[in-house]
Amino acid sequence: MILTPFLFLCALLALLSPAVSAASEYHEQLVLRPFPSSLLASFNFRSNASLKAFEHQNFRYFPRSLGQILQHASTKELHLRFTTGRWDAESWGERPWHGFKEGGTGVELWAWIDADNEEAAYSKWITLTQSLSGLFCASLNFIDSTRTTLPVMTFEPVGNHSSKSLHLLHGTLPGEVVCTENLTPFLKLLPCKGKAGISSLFDGHRLFDASWQSMAIDIRPTCPKDTAECQVEIEQTVDMVLDVDRSKRPRDNPIPRPGPADQLVCDESKPYNSHDTCYPISKSADQGWRLSEVFGRNVPGACPLTEEEENHRKHVCIKVPNDREVLVTAGSIERKHLDGLSRCYSILDDFPFDLVLPPRKRPSEVPLEQPVLHAERTIIGHGQERGGMRSILTNPSSTNAVEFIYFETLPWFIRPYIHTLKAKVATQNGTVFSIPASEIIKDVFYRPALDRQRGTQLEIILSVPAASTVTLVYDFEKAILRYTEYPPDANRGFNVAPAVIRLLGDGSRSNDSNQGRNAQPPVYLRTTSLLLPLPTPDFSMPYNVIILTSTVMALAFGSIFNILVRRLVAVDEVPESGLKAKLLGRIVAVRDKLRGKGVKVE
Image (cartoon, rainbow, N blue to C red):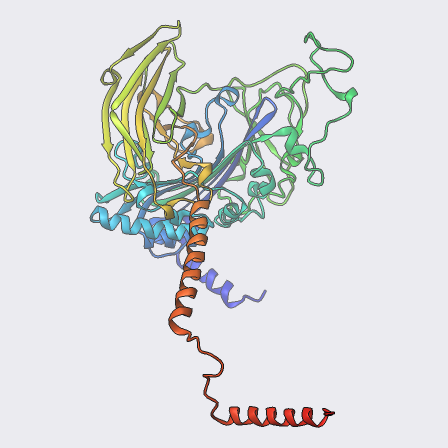
């Protein structure tokens, strides 16, 4: 075999640095969770590199493009989120990864940067956002000082940091549209780049047609106890909730068409049910589906760069009871969990893998994990000058109170009045009573906004009693923007970033083995983003004013210019001199002679 110079150099580096290669590893896993008429698919890719190799830019599985950006911006820990849709807690239960890998609608980014002061940290933050904007084809460069905050209590580093001069910066773009232009750079960061392994299931048509989807990138330094050398770990996660019926639709038939009438399953208990009236019954989670039908393709084989032993690989896991039949391709090894509610399969490197969940009439659903807290946030009030913000926080537990941190960022053109903050508590038996906000609020951090420089930052530590609902309401005033500060779609409204809720105490429960290596990961909730209507001028009036003013100025200037410059004289006063006048006189004389010869006088 003849080695090219590039392959020879790679082989030589591998021989000279065996410790670096031994410290690198790569893992990937797909967890499937059937819901009523939908499917939750959680993809997880994790790789790491030695800290010394990372500092010397000796990358193996860690993406070089992202590693150089982190080094140039002095970023020690990074968390990036791309999210679209709304999580339905009533139908889907608790969020995957306990909400830790979920971001607000649009793009959310927070990072710990090593710098001497806040000004230097912000300068490196701008470098980081602009570099990530070019890498992921996103508008992260629009995260300026008005969209950047410095959280104090909400976020904590999850890595092992030795530096004490770390600064946390957080930014959001709630109006950012996530599309395939962000998915393609995401796949390029993976070792197999979507060509092998579970990453080959990614299809932009399926992913962005989901009811809810989130892409997350987490980078942190780790110092495992079993190894003497610290590492830099990158974890990429994709979570999506797919509609099974819509995903099964072939690509050449994207528009759903109603099926034959004789195939409809009607609810005969309805009083209006007849031969020409039908109320369709929604399908349950026990409908059958195939992995290649839902994602449009099967897994061509495992990624050959996976460092796990073949006997311990768990590439694809599905959460269904053990008594339900699951069919897979030949060669896959099945391992059932002791809880009786999930099982995992290993994939061979060079053999395609497909999974079939046959339909079943008798329901056999895995019980949903109910969320610890329900949150809802809306804008209230009427008019163009003032309004209010209302947050409804519900504790479903009948025994334990819930303590959490409520983090809210507002644009600078929203001026809240914190002294109007009021709390109202409602119990499950219908009793409603108002209490001072100070009785349930334990601590408050408030940083007011500066016009066109920074937004409002509000962090509150509060608790909700058992089986109760707390409603927080405060008033705000809307500012009037300058003419050039309105976007082209000003009448649509202005995006307000979602609120971030971090549970404290018992909310930080332990995570299972399929969802990471953190012993007690934080539990997060995020509300939906909001649209704020602002006083909007009539943008057609400037156009009318410009046209009218230009017309008046043209008429006035033209008239005055003619009066000042042009002279009015009689024809006989015009002096006839020069070559032109002589030629004209000659022509007139010749014409008169010719006319005279042709005239007869009697």
